Image (cartoon, rainbow, N blue to C red):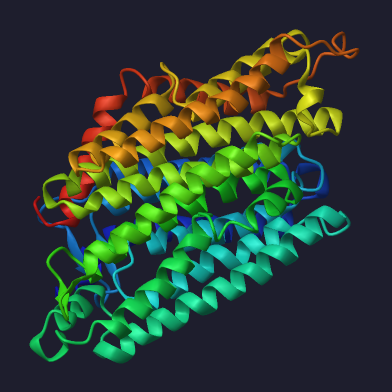
Length: 503
């Protein structure tokens, strides 16, 4: 563990510093600006977040010399943390702009403040290297999301979404905390890397059962955070009831941060070769990940076929997407393919962040204009608003893994990692599930372009803010599926190498 040097350690928490400063600015503007001018808070928040991400990437990128543990071993500064922190900052910026024209959100300064606090937690867990930071970061992400889900207090669906999310989330957090507590109790350590050393020590080498019990509880907690089946029960109702910009943020930022922590936690605490009482611990949690991947993909895609509400359809799609990503986690079982598997997960989350934000931005604009979230009401959208229909098509094709959208290469890298790990059957299972998913994505596209509606002569207005949001995210999704594939994947691969200390 490195000795503490204040100036040297600052780059490790640049995003957190930027988020804290932005939160203070937003709070001041909310207190000082009149009601009529508070929409400008969204732009201030978004620009500050994007500036923080840009400065972090340009001036404080991790190098081989600066990669390591900082702040008393609580935080690890490396390229993998940089990738996921950048995702979270950009997702929060886009969410802020999405909320600007939504009734009950656009003029609420506290909304942007809560998003910033949740993003702060997401950045903390992306580089967490200590059990205390893991739990504090997770709760800093999740508690603000309970508030955001029920932000429309007078809307019964929103209140129900917040309550369900709170109840399920509290239960899952308690289970995870108990698992983390058991790990601390067995080892007397809170630092992830020190825990791994103790578990590998001779005095603990014959005590596998309690570690496996703690591992199962921790996996259950992570399963809730990433909305993987069978811990998904909250997802459809919360996605449907929460304000659409909140659903967009919840579906990407929380999931990306949780996958970053999942990779870091299990790679650090239960590395390859850790054998307790004849049980190779990594194989055990990899098998859990494989089972969760199969269940999540199957349940998410099959149940999505019957959905009539676009937000519930995207909720079950999100469960299936968690299953695809868990294929990369399962591929960690072979050391030769570990770096490729982690890079595939990081690339997939990067792609998924922009794709899902694009899809929910269209849903937010459509529901705000029409008051409907029913798939059948999207009929004739290509004639009412060709721009909206096109951007939604790009998002759905990307989620379905159709080139030239980014989702194609996202799935390709995950399936390739599975094949390289000898999990050919799991890759084939993912391909079959992708075919099932493509059916309901194409059904929505068919509704928009083929079906007719009596409201086809009523165009849907698109504000200048949404032109920027839809245009930027659409371009990024296309670029990530073409010329941007290799640079982003190489960046993710450097992150994976940094995690294992090879750079």
